[in-house]
Amino acid sequence: SQTIHQWPVTLVQPVGSPLSLECTVEGTSNPNLYWYRQAAGRGLQLLFYSVGIGQISSEVPQNLSASRPQDRQFILSSKKLLLSDSGFYLCAWNVRTLDTEAFFGQGTRLTVV
Amino acid sequence: SQKIEQNSEALNIQEGKTATLTCNYTNYSPAYLQWYRQDPGRGPVFLLLIRENEKEKRKERLKVTFDTTLKQSLFHITASQPADSATYLCALRAYNFNKFYFGSGTKLNVKP
Image (cartoon, rainbow over all chains, first blue to last red; front, side, top):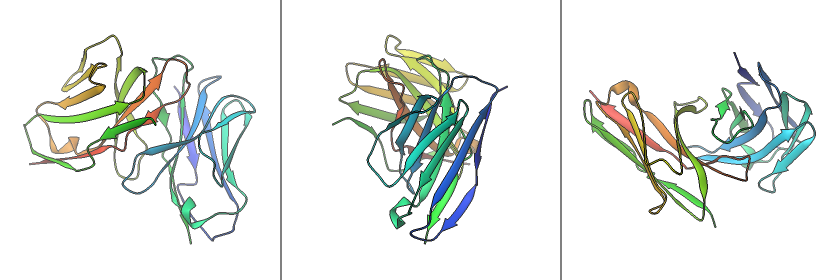
């Protein structure tokens, strides 16, 4: 069966420090991969999505970047965190057909102090 | 600009009643509309998918309707239970995009 792993679960980082969040998917090949951010009490904002290795599309200009070095690995990074980067980050994947749902990881609660 | 709107106010209902949640969208031509459940501190979990050529979909106590003329989907939970308390999100996916766009969600509180 397919599973998605996302870590760490919680993270407290100082302003200006770097960030690396990792997500891996097991049990499937060639998935679409997504990074979402959710502010407290808000909906999910799509940050990045990827349809293949090295193929990254950014939805909103921001202080973050994403990479997909392997088929089932998706990394969210920042060189220097801002206070506004705080939030709940979610990785998701789905099969590359239209009528399929997204499967989400457990999320990372990031607090920038 | 594109918008997906869900009622930001929490919906409070009594156990056993039917909960109805609304998702309205503008400037989209979605191929599919999905509903997810999210519990506090967790990632969303898929519940139901409805295609643009479908009017209604059911799964156990859940029912989704999709009106592309009104640009609206309704999500119903019949015989609601306290365990149904959660935030419910709708998501749209267009034909030519590999992306899901989510609404802000509606929090449902089912009281015993």
